[in-house]
Structures are given as C-alpha cells and as structure tokens.
Image 1: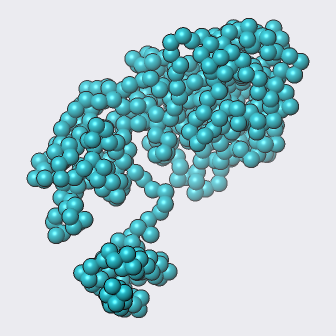
Image 2 (image 1 turned 180 degrees about the vertical axis):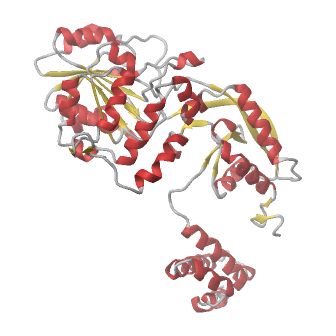
Image 3 (image 1 turned 120 degrees about the vertical axis):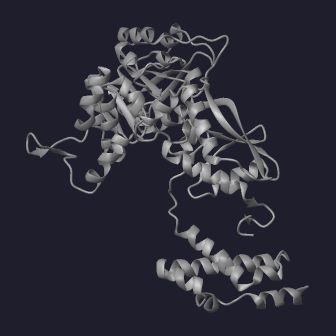
Amino acid sequence: MADQRQALFRKIPSVDVLLAHPRIEESLVHQPRVLVIRAIHEILETLRATIQKNAVSEETLGTDTIVEDIIIRIEQLSMPSLRNVINATGVVVHTNLGRSLLAERVLEKFTPLAGGYSNLEYSLEQGRRGSRYTHVEYLLKELTGAEAGMVVNNNAAAVLIALETLAKGKEVVVSRGQLVEIGGAFRIPDVMRKSGATMVEVGTTNKTHLKDYEEAIGPDTALLLKVHTSNFQIVGFTEEVPLPDLVNLGRKHDIPVMEDLGSGCLLDFSNYGMIREPTVQESLEQGVGVVTFSGDKLLGGPQAGIILGQKDLVTAVRENQLNRALRIDKLTLLALEETLRMYRDPQRAIQDIPTLRMICASHEALSQNADRLNALIGDLDTENFSVEQIDGDSKVGGGALPLQKLKTRLLSLVPARLSAQKMEERLRYNTPPVICRVEKDRLMLDVRTIQESDFQTVAQAVRDLAQFNPETGRSIKEA
C-alpha cells in the first residue's frame, strides 16, 4: 500500500511543469503570479492529502485534470470576499445578507460624494467648521417632531452611548419581560453593564405593573427604560405598562424615560394590512425623553443607530467623548439623508425604498413575478428536479414584526436525482450566489426578495442546475 501511495505521489506534476502549462500561462496574464502559485500549492496539497487517505484514482492525477482544478481555484481566490448575492429566501431584512437594500436614488449619489470632497464637517453658510449631524438632524426633527437628533454606527451603539451618558454610575429600571437578546448575542443586561449603569429589574417575564416601577425608584435612579420586544412576542397571560403611564411616572419623579424601539419605523404598517408596530413619532408624542432605533431595518436605510428626543438629553449624548468612536462616515450620512428625504412623501417611500416595497408587495404582483420567472426558466428536460408554483409565507426579518406572515408566491424545486440540500448548495456556488431556503424537503425560491434585475440570472442558474450531473460534478453539456 505504501509503495502504491509513493507511485501516486510521483505522478503529481511539479509546480514548474504546471506553470508552463498553456492554460496556467494564460492565467498569469490576468492574475498576479503570487495568487496563481498559491492556487497551485493548495490544489497539490489537497491531492497529497487525498493520496495519503487512499482516496484518489490515477485518472485524477492527469495534468489536464489538475490544471482544471487549479483554474477553478484561481477564480475562487480572485473573487472578493464581500460580494453580491441574490436573496431568494423571502426574508426581506435579512441580517446575514446585509439587511436593507438602498434605493436607486441613494446609489446615484454615491459616486460623486465618495470620489470627491464634501462639506461633511464644514458649514458652507459660515465658512468654518460645522457638525456632521446637521446633514440628517433637520430631517429627523421634521419627520418625527423630535427636539434634537444624532446618529451613531448602529442601534447597539446608540443604546450604549445613551445609557453611558445618562445613567453611568446610576440605576436604570427595566421590566424583566424586556431583557431581550438580539442577533450577535447583544443582550440588554450586558450592554447595561458595559455602560456603567446598574440595572434594576422589575416585574416578571410576562407581567409588569406600574407599581413595580414606582417601588423600584430610588435616589440613584437615572432612567426608566422601555425596550420594545420587536424580535419576539409574549402572548397569553401578559401585561406591560403603557408608555404614557411610564412617562407620567417619570415626570412625577423628574426621571426621563428612554425607549429602545429596535427596528424603528416611521410608517404605520397597519395601514397596509399588517400587524401594528409602534412608530417613532408616537413614542416622541407620548413624551419619551430619548428614543433609539436602527437605520437599516424597517426604516430601509443604511446601518446606523438613531438617537432622538429632548434637546438637553441628546446634546449630552452628543458631547460624550465616546461619540467619536461610534460616529458614522460620510457615505452612511448620505444614504441616511437620501432615505429620510423620501419619507416626506410616504406613498413614494413605499414605492422607492426597496425594504418597504418588498414588505408591502401584493400577492397579485408576486404571482405575476412567479409566472414571469417560471417562463424565463422555460421547459426543463431534466431528471434532477421538477418545478411547481405554490403559495407560502415570507418574513420581514431583522427581528421586526416576528408574528407577521407575508403571503407570497414560491417556485418550489421538487427533488428527484438531486436532493433539496444539494440544489441549495449548487445555487449557493453560482456566480452570483443565489441564496434560497429549504422547506419540507423542497428548495424554495421566494420571488418577494428577488430583485427585478436578477430574474434572468436566477432563471439561468436554475437551468444550469437542471444540467448538473451529480456523478461527475459537472454540467451534462460538459460531460
């Protein structure tokens, strides 16, 4: 056995021989030599490891076969790590896929601002240094009625800096039922400790009363905190204190109320046939001192943490030295400003902001898109799978509206020679990757989150999948 392995090792071509191969030489014209050599070494190391495990045949040691694997590896290594994917999962605000898409109107502004200087912190009116927050604060105040506003790099940062500013070394009273954990293991109790504030839990998991808050207030109480449970719901025997009652209690004791809305929205989604979500405007109207929320969830903008509220409180947060470590850059400000400008016309916002457009898409429109995608795919002469159109549910995602089901239309790939898991993997390896979901042992393509410009690409990916030979690992056409 050892002699056989040694014989196989000797059949592996040298690096110099491979570098002299015409296809490798062609790659060297377009790719850096260091990348090509890395690809060669990685493929050869894989071959040696496979031989060591007695899992390789002589056919796979042919120079042309090895060169083909090297070319594929060169292509993989030359791809950027962060790249476009097609979201066919039906999860609109997909955290793993970058959350909200930016509107075309935003993208059009990127090149001139990214490639040139700007008045980021320069007042054109006064001819001297200005504040970066002025580019969005006027819109935040206009749209929500807040006295003041500022923005940091995400909502976790917004909660952290607000607590650190307003309650460091002091106590913050919060309901046990609101001690949430969101993605990335971000927990309210943990961020409270990082801020230097002392958390005082009141009530129970399912029920908290106004008297629970009142009994917890003491000389060291700096804030009453309300956390909107946007990523889960407790149902049944439950009770929580209405925000106006909590605000009145705070006023009685001269203690501000801070609300973390999480997803944060500026539109009332119940007007579009969905579960009602508290809006930012409502929280401020009810007298909250500070409200924080995300920019890239229900708002449909870039990653950002937005802080709104009373002028004295927001000003104190803005002057915190921690703010410099958490501030956002000019491109985020641009994207947020342009997104907010669209909210001046709510109906246009629904049409032009991709997140809102996808959430509010009608079943009729989705059915038409499913028909169109099916037509683009066409008739498939394949034993790998069959295609059906079925109804299903999409999700808002991003921890927003967890109980909301969005009726949608799906293209269901029913396994035959290929399993649902294998089809999911092959589409994930497509260029660009098509990310789907497996449900009831079928592969689902949800048209809600497939963008208009991606329909042809998805159709071609499905056609290529139909031609895939699982025995050879290559297209039937190539075999």
